Length: 386
Image 1 (cartoon, rainbow, N blue to C red):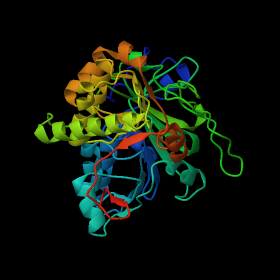
Image 2: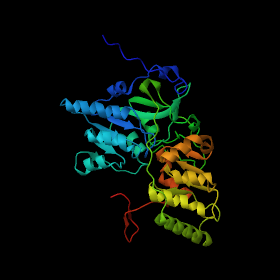
Image 3: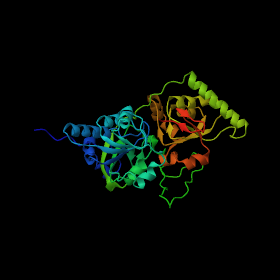
Image 4: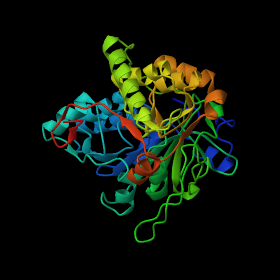
């Protein structure tokens, strides 16, 4: 006679609210709340903040259903790309019917190009409003990774914010993953803005400097809609970053030369320039790191990801403050973040992507944006993805 599996032991240091501790279950139990045809919204942006246990458990549940001859697909909403391993597991089972708003995983890409997966590629700042307006129907289940739950039931965000606030606001059922790998010192590094409203009731977003705080450090959530809490202790997927080479060094030199020309022409402030934005990837990371060789100190950054190069610039004083929505770090960068979290907490702020990627804020702050491209035409139109 087999005995029932032991109930998970609550981590009272990370889950300090009794009501949420009473909802702790395994990942396999949590995915029972997800049904065929559901719209599932998961946390995560780039490599950070993707649920570590529930999404693989969902992929396994879909695999077993298909092996038994059952149809099982979900519509998958995210912040942007998510952990490649997790997305691959779901794509390999043909378990995703619709994917939005962005992906970068080869298996999913092949399914999209073959017509086996519908895909909506939209501007990342538009997602929250479109979901609130019902463009994608009801969000049946949200699966959101957090760093902890306070005594009063507020959620400490993880290493990405992305669309997590929106998912927590709109989903009918919520599954929380509480990841004890995330350093507790990350608390306070987030600015969760609850001032957005749908037209015609919108008001100005009062963010005028990169380091402005306009929100609160925690997520709010209705505990009645939280159906399960899953405990994990797993690091974010590390980004593979190549070391700077002669090409990236040459690009960085060109960027510094351009900045110098604009300063001499009186179009940029001499010492601090304007807030910088840098895209994701090897070249962007290497070029950003190359800015440490320039004459500028006390710079600010307003971007969507923070890579290793940004941490280096913060370390040496080139950058005094960086605003973003997620980290996208190598294994070494993740270790550095965890080991020096108290230092970075005073110099980094993570926001919802509807704020970090908001075109009006970008234009008003005068962002200098540095991103890779595939081609550009004579009119200045840029193809960066296709």
